[in-house]
Amino acid sequence: MVVEIPNVFTQEEVKDILDKLSKSEFIDGKKTAGWNARGVKNNRQLKSSDPHATALKERVKTALSKNSLFQATVRPKTIHTLLFSRYEVGMSYGTHTDNAMMAGRWRSDVSFTIFLTPPETYEGGELVIEGPSYEQKYRLASGAAIAYLSSTLHRVAPITQGSRWAIVGWAQSWVRDPAQREILFDLDTARRSIFNEQGKNKNFDLISKSMSNLMRCWID
Image 1 (tube, rainbow, N blue to C red):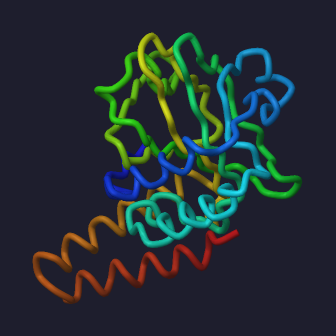
Image 2 (cartoon, helix red, strand yellow; image 1 turned 90 degrees about the vertical axis):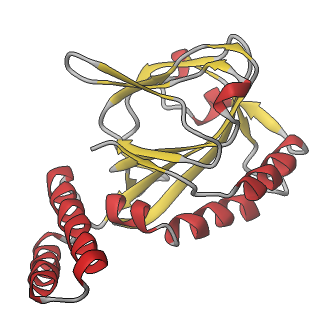
């Protein structure tokens, strides 16, 4: 399941984040790539020891914890890895799949990208998610995010003009099976729609009961 999540950050928040990143130290992105992806990764990333790094990571986690669409999509047990990346002209990240385990102990169930630079300010740089017989390309608005399965093959297309700044992260979900997460997402969407249109009624209660019981069965 691929879900676009608008307005994770407001434009004022994005401006402040970019201002801090512009004053921070970036290093070769290969340093955080797995051995199999190192040869196709060409970008710059915020140095983990940079003075701004810890506060920026907490800011991202706080924003995602308050975003109901992200929570319904991912059901995050933990957001365990965050990288602040920069792509300049000629840079790209070739086809790869994300490591199954990160930070030594966390599973990568869901990957996400939060776009910081407006799409009209650069060319290329699409996030390309590959399927068996198709590709989906994404260049979202500044402050928007996209969440997708960490198990997919994906890439970042070469930048041909301007620069692309983004936040990339990974989460371990309370619900390991992506099909089960999608069922919960659909049920949650349906019950919210019922509540918004009809208020709390019998159908809302029955769906809420089913969601809770399924989560009891599926939480890992």
